[in-house]
Image (tube, rainbow, N blue to C red; front, side, top):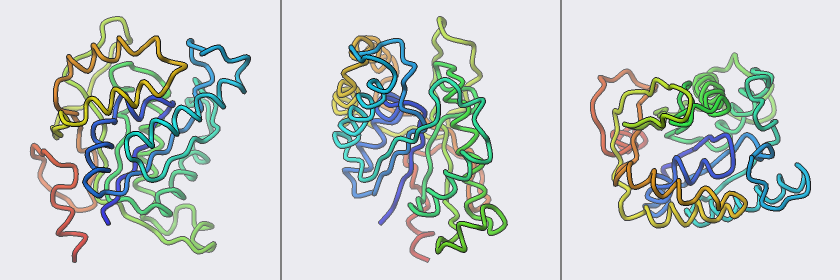
Length: 250
């Protein structure tokens, strides 16, 4: 079975940034997993929660509902501090993602670029940096060797992609977006993507803004190929698994 891992920062990222790809590939038989680094407890929209712990519980439940709606097979929320990933221990977070990659053994990994996607959120950018390093380290026996002594094996994912866009949001921080190298058609899954975002009831006030942004984005989700297991020329793709079926079959 082909496998895809998506690493995000906050509950609702999985739907807002990656929902079309997750729904498309899940329906197509790919085992999709999502790891979210924070529970989103610093969100401005509180959903009536009485304190951070209550909001964490609420958003974890919303995240689970969203992932199920998208057909995601495996999902989980870690407990790093929302809004503070730039102050998290780099080796610790990366090591945790290395462990997850070695357990889940994805062929494709998708995440944010260092710019933080269209919102420029620092947590998004840090998530991309942690994930990019974990993508590299998971294949090296010299990195996190204690995991190997506990029964895990190294794993080299085939491709790493950053989600990207052809427009920015003027009200948000200035960003330099990764160039588009993959256009994945997700038009049949946009309604499900919006429904998954709506599962985040604490953030429901943002739904009209999300729907407007989705209309502007059109029928494709856009990605940038950031790294590959085998050196290859850059070219425009329409499928994140292009070329991988043959590699997996070897």
